[in-house]
Length: 183
Image (cartoon, rainbow, N blue to C red; front, side, top):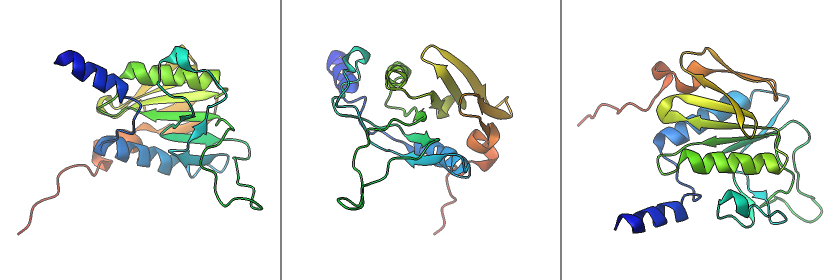
């Protein structure tokens, strides 16, 4: 019985499995980054990886990777307005990919995904762990700095990004407490 659960869990691990804290953390980080005029910010953008063999990362993906948040320093992809009004999947890799750990994912899966991003040319990756109030900023596949609530700011030296950790994880800013029930 437990073997079936583990296979099912691993088989579906790459699926979109958000949660309340995952969603709130993703929204807070996006809100802080969107004010940076040097970056173009996207959420849940499908990255076309159909031309790459990512099988060694064991991600069970064939055509796309989808970071929770990504950022471009240069001109982001745009649709050719003569033929299309939107792009479903982009081949231009972002400069920054951010993954927010959900309760249904393993850290190991997201670390493999981060290694895949680096192999595709992404320059910086973040692994955000809301349950631990922690962010790991990867400057290379096996090199990262950890930022938590005891740090005042997150610093991504590759992307030149400074963010307030308390604005991301601070309990006094967290609106996730249950609302009072009124009759």
